[in-house]
Amino acid sequence: MFKLSSVLLAVLTLSSCQSFNSVSEHSPNQRRYIANIGSGVLKGFIDDISAQTRNSTQRFTNKQIEKKALEYIKKNHKKLGITKAQADEIGSIYDDLPYMNKVHKHLTRNITDVIPVNSSIAEKAYSAIVKKSASSLNPYSAAGRELREGTLAARSSASPNSPLNFDDAVVRQEIRSVDNVTVRKTYQDNYKLFKARQSTDPIAAANINEIIESATVVYNRTGKSAMGKGCKKFNENASSEVLEVKANIDIEFAIAVEKKAFEKAGGPFKHHKDIPDNKKLTVDEIEEVRVATFQKQLNYTAEEAATAVKRLKRAPCQVY
Image (cartoon, rainbow, N blue to C red; front, side, top):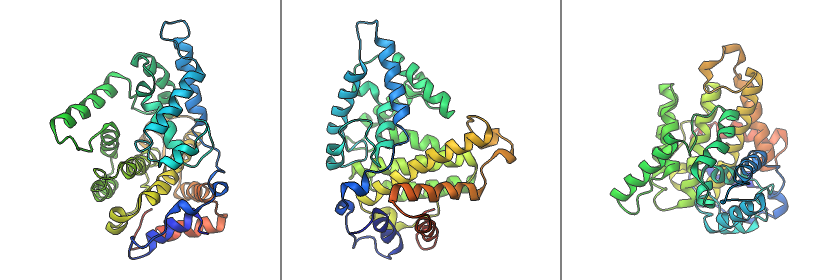
């Protein structure tokens, strides 16, 4: 029986990405072990919405929101970058599963699709996330709504099968926020190689967006690139399952790097240029986080994780 990591590594190191086994062979015990980082954020967000609506005619209790969110996940699992089997495995929105970070992020960004709550209430609740992460994006603010409405307008005027959506727009915006020309080009080149997949595979599309957006978070908090130059064979041919595993790794890595960067700086900041050099994470500190992420997500020992990271930085597929 393969570990999840062996699947990812083999795809990245083989010259061909097509002769590959699925990650579906793994037992639940191998996959259900990581305490999800985003549970507290989502719970606080739902608590806030519930509190705001408590004395209104449009009241939503925590349990009502959680029930609706679970129903939404089951019906819209592809948008969240997970399979139906993975969605069915979720018994609670606070389950500790490797893919729940992206599920939680999607729910907080799309709660008005989950329940018919006023966007002003969602905006106020999301502002706590913005403050904690020093993010410039509140999907329910005027700017966020304009971004969302702009993608809908573009989609309606283009092909009905156009892959353009809010998440695509966010990723493009985040890539533009990378001020280092070389790093930005690396991200753009990887995104271009991935893009052909997005119109035909919605699960892959969601995970591709997670991979790229996570890389922009790491750069903006550290000034260091989180991606290698990549390779065409992987970006174009890696299975949806492998992309899903990689997205799970990358989003947790980005969250952990951001947390460590804020701790070293003494508080949240928007961009690495906002803090002095001696307060920034070093390359070694970033790599410590990456190795720790591999250990958690892929159930590796520290030695196995360090070896895996080194392999993924080598040619021909320099993923990191």
